[in-house]
Length: 253
Image 1 (spheres, helix red, strand yellow):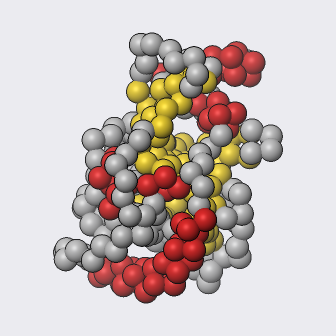
Image 2 (cartoon, rainbow, N blue to C red; image 1 turned 180 degrees about the vertical axis):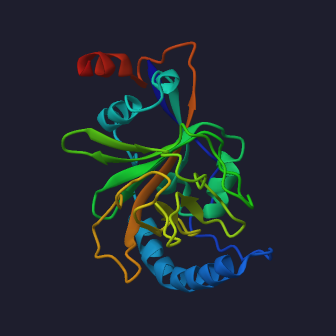
Image 3 (cartoon, rainbow, N blue to C red; image 1 turned 90 degrees about the horizontal axis):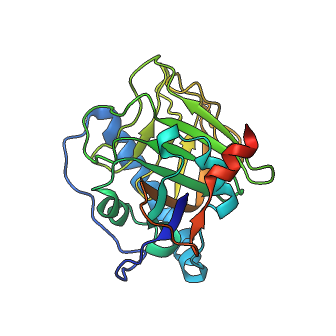
């Protein structure tokens, strides 16, 4: 059994501005940060209108949760899902997200974009903001979920390189890499948009193709909702918020 549980945080301003922190970026990161900060000025206006009308809703529904749970490593399939961060509830704020997930180890990052595509990543070593190098274990994977058929496609580590995950000081999230410097999944610090492309690390296709690729072949996506779930074992069952993945797993065998 897994318990699908939401946390109830203290009220925070969803669009609170946070000045850029001064850190030692490499040249590539600095150019990327400056570009993303410019994009954030435009994305902020969209997000402000979105937050005014935003209803608190789950990024992933219970039936979709069951499908994704069946794709997890066996020891996590009956874990409890605690929604540590939800953009619809907590606001599109990287600072808030990193504060809420800083003590987390294993978990799921789930995105639903403005075209309805659901995709994300299973992480094993948390979100270590400021990490100078890639980290993670070979259990990590990227995934896509077809909401109509509840079909999950997972893309585990291939061993081609060690670029599993990185979270530099600027607050971007990178999953996977390739010789062309494209990433399997890249989420901007604003949590409002990102890009996806093929990566050698996970041998994944672009996780969302709602928009045509840019000249560098990366597909841009715009985030409608984003959640981070902490996975942990359960000793008791809350019947009102329980999702049985054993039933789903048995049906698939």
